[in-house]
Structures are given as structure tokens and as C-alpha cells.
Image (cartoon, rainbow, N blue to C red; front, side, top):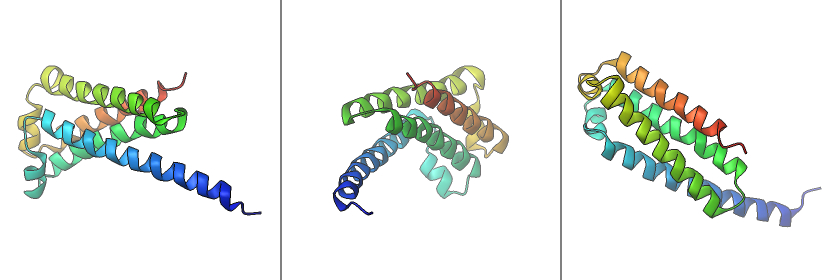
Length: 137
């Protein structure tokens, strides 16, 4: 039988959790874009698929641990702490890729190099998966 009070409570929790997750995803996307030496928005507007692939991978890479944090946390503050940690890890990993592993990654993305963008996206997603799996305690 349908329990309206139970549904209302669950729906309220869903709205808060989903809203916070969307907010964190938006803030992460902005911080990620600020951390790159190129302008993703302009590159994507100019039809640079490499920029879109790299940014898309970063977004998915952060959404994975965010989803995990939603599942394992019991409150807003704990969720926010895990989201913050996950975001820092994702941005640091991207910086390491750009500054240590593939030092000319920015130039490659700006030039539309899809192979480099795919590598960047795959790294972001891989780090995100490890990030999410590490949230089990």
C-alpha cells in the first residue's frame, strides 16, 4: 500500500540531496574550468570536440564520487565534506596530468587533439571511480 507520509519524507530527502549534488557539480565544473589554462567555454563554442571530451570526462569523474557520497553519507555536512574532498582530488589529478604527465596537454586540447582529450577524460573518470570506491568505510 502507498504510504504518502513515507513518500513525502523520501521526496524531501531526494530534493535536498539532488539539489546539493547539482550545486556541487556546478561549483566543481566552474573550479575545474578556472584551473585549466584554456577557456573551455570558448573552445566548445568554437566546436572544439577535444575540449568538450576533456571537460565531459572531468564532470563524469566528479559525478561518480558525488553519487557514492550521496549513498554512504548520513547528513548534509558529511556529504559536503566528501564532495569537497572528491573535488580537490579530481582537480589535483587533472593538474598532475597537465603539468607532469603530458606537459603540453593544454596546447593539445586547444588544437583539438581528440586522443589527448580522451586520455584526459579517461584519467578523470578512472580517478573518479577510485575516488568513489574509496568512500566505503
